[in-house]
Length: 112
Image 1: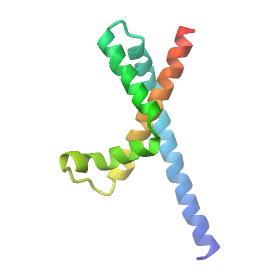
Image 2: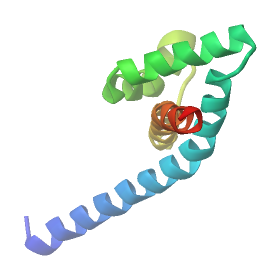
Image 3: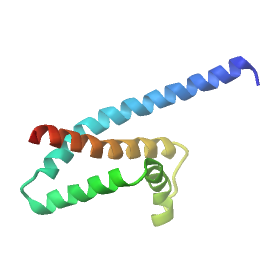
């Protein structure tokens, strides 16, 4: 394999990684605010539900979450996914995962 081919493939991977990063950041920052507000809610069922969400998302590896979101629709419901689903599943997994972390960061900042 030529050096120019390898550099081209690395460049494409870098662009995809940057795209995932940007989408995850734009999606998880505002969702993290909602998670923090839900966690601090006086309505106990909502606070407990958000607390459970945070525990699950922070307590399981991101790779497991990626696999669950990627293959869950087919495995659980028999829904066929197309080739673009892998990117959408990646965006969803990263946003949901990082929203849990940002929610706790926001909550601790608000409460301090």
